[in-house]
Length: 95
Image (cartoon, rainbow, N blue to C red; front, side):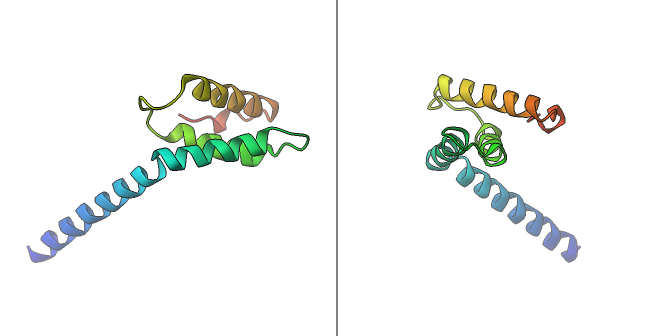
């Protein structure tokens, strides 16, 4: 009985830690950093599609909130589509 209570407490603490980490990864500052990293990797003479895709996926994996700009979301979605299409990697799309 005591072991099951300890396990329940550990599971609850792990869920709370995961929730806190997700909120930190999806706060406004983090999303701004993801978008800046995406822009740096996707624009200019030398494009790094791997870094651009990684940054875009991090941004798009976050829940949409009212502070998100629709043009940013559209730009990221279109860029991810282009990158995946050019690499024939549609299976890597964000579910």
